[in-house]
Length: 226
Image (cartoon, rainbow, N blue to C red; front, side):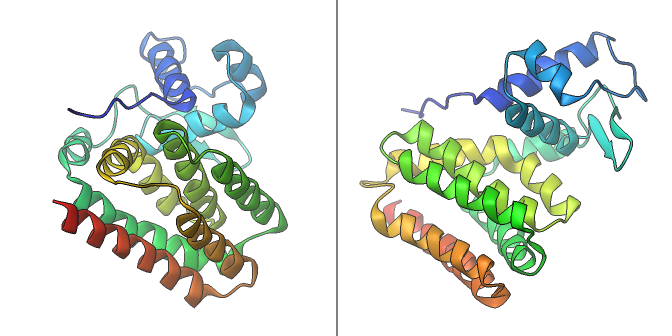
């Protein structure tokens, strides 16, 4: 039986905002209202609104212009064929993509992170620690944690790739956790904590190697279970 994947609040907000864009409320080239205006309209918090905006930017619908705001770039998703590839990708392919994106992001985050980035990463890690007993909650918390590290890389291309991958990543993670006998144990959480320690210590090599080793371990576990 296929796992039931709960649509996150950010996904829901992104889809509602996209529907309003497609309706013509904001034509291509138009600047969107600020997140403090949009968030209450969509019934979500500012952080969720921010994530929804990032998702739509990753899908080619919005574009952020530094110092100017967020603008409508297209009514249709960019790279529809690429999106189909992602949807068809199996778990192994998703993990391989994560190796490339998250390994590099962790290395860059260790050298570029700001005090605000560290605060956001540590907050995401604490939230992840609290949401390890239920699959859908762990999936959302884990994605938010890894997104905080990608954000700390301050590389817009890596951020866009991660956001584009997020829907398929969420589905793949749910599939993996449903296949696993155990999930969210203390050892798993400790691995994530060690990555945070490396980023805080500006140890770029260790942050990258720990991230890649963790993902390779997941790949090995999945291959041995099939």
